[in-house]
Length: 212
Image 1 (cartoon, rainbow, N blue to C red):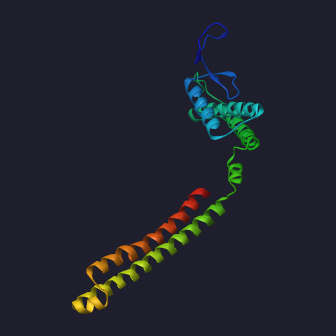
Image 2 (cartoon, one colour):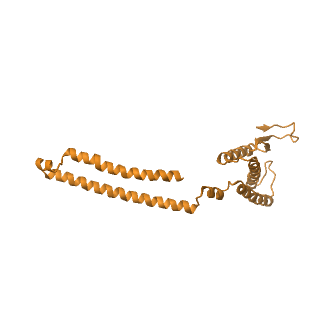
Image 3 (tube, rainbow, N blue to C red):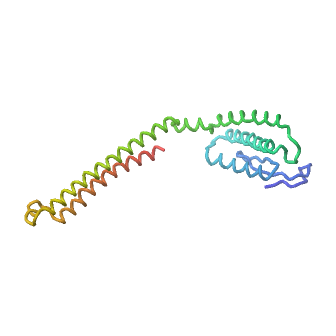
């Protein structure tokens, strides 16, 4: 939304109107500032909950400080303001430094700085890393268990097949060893044991996901 020249605008310039989080209107100098402000505002409101109007007013103030920092940072980078006048780089650098402190303090008071978010999650970087290592260790144990299970079952199957090949029909009958019984063992014992082992591990993975 823009405010066109004339009316309440004595300088005859186009200003860009945006709504603040609390519902007030402010007027910015360029379309880029307007787009930046609205994107920043929407992301703050999407990623955080501000149940109190005073929090929204603090967010208004935070965004105003940030839009000034955005504007001055752009001017400082290019050496000119929006009307191509030379800027005082020393003055802008000081303003940016002062506003950065204010921005950091406001974010802390609103509870949207990174350290506060980490505390609310109850998990520091060290704790996250420790959990990650624990899970990697458990996965390593699972791989070892899979290897052991696969090797064990393979040698059991190998023994049955080689015994079947060495025996005649009478010996196979006595040993209850036939192609059907070998296939039944594969289906009802080897596959069942393998699936039970993996199902147990998948359940532990589901618990990890719920912890995130």
